Image 1 (cartoon, helix red, strand yellow):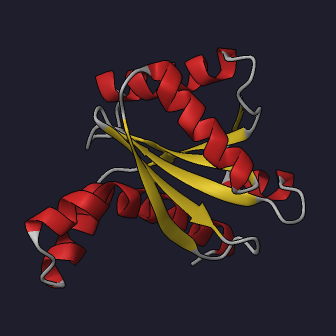
Image 2 (tube, helix red, strand yellow):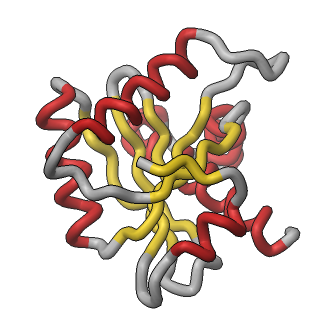
Length: 158
């Protein structure tokens, strides 16, 4: 995996027709979002229920291939003061382990500050009077879309 420093650098590496995928990596789930081929809109896509690393990576690789993904925006769970804690280390280890898999697609990756992404999505769902059960079903993939849209918006200066 090649770590990319800015949204512009990531988007400029993509081939025509490739999409971006946003990931919200949690201890129980991986929220997934997909960008359109014009790199303007992020849409919640799916949630992978985490089991073990091997099956999780295989599921992620299958989606990447099927959806023509050319780059990843991975949420980086920094502490509120901007420091890196255990969750950042777990995210970096997950990324490193993906890179060590021989069959996993080699993609450029942008690590994107995800502070308050889940809280922002939760607030939106509460304001729209979404039931607790429905919130639990969609929050991870919506957080992934929030992360991905943040990177896309930064590219366009929004």
